[in-house]
Length: 315
Image (cartoon, rainbow, N blue to C red):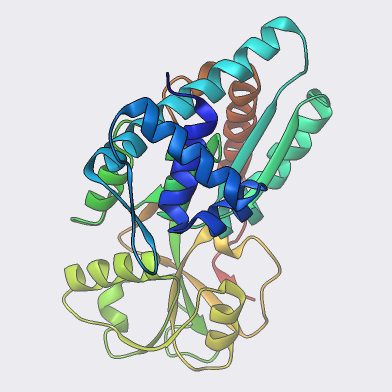
């Protein structure tokens, strides 16, 4: 018989590559991890691990069991949450993870509404960019993952479709891209701009995922951007543009906070949107607490869509 604690331990060993690291991750002793793995191999009747000199590797059977463990543990977690709600033992919990601009713009109002309407539900939040957030979801380490894709950019959503295969996708909002130029830029007085007009500019690029999408967008416009600065921090992007060091394209959600003076926001033509979605494993939306959190995220997205956080113009 397979015990779920053995599956969790096997997955921890597979991820960390050692008994010691797995023990630290699980909060137990190294001998306990070793003993659980011996018991699991005995129950399976075949070796699951190869003890190499520097790391522990999975056998073919071990790799297969790790793949199955994801679905087993995910389903078990969903069942525990739903049964707890039915039994009235507790109101439930939701583990939410999001990319950075989604965390700052979309989630706070959703969490505030959730606490006000359902104070007994425990909600935790972490910030993880795709594809790490997708891994957390598939490994049953979160219940809802906010993610995004650029379905309007040719070929840009192929990777997202592969990553989201077999997940429940709930669309939240369409987040338009906005062009940032310095206040004294030659196009600063325009209301809108086409990417081709910026072909000769120096560029400030954002995160790796957005950078790859922007490269595709520029390629479609007939040029390759000259990226002189790259940073994952949106406020740094804004500051570099304000200092006259380049132009940038950012999702509108990334500009929901206070903006540095000295920049101009222009509408991008033709309009390109980043589709923001909430992802969950099959069966999770039926868990009462998870379903309530998804509905609050939808309401928060509707409020954001109804009042654009920024307006093109001088800042």
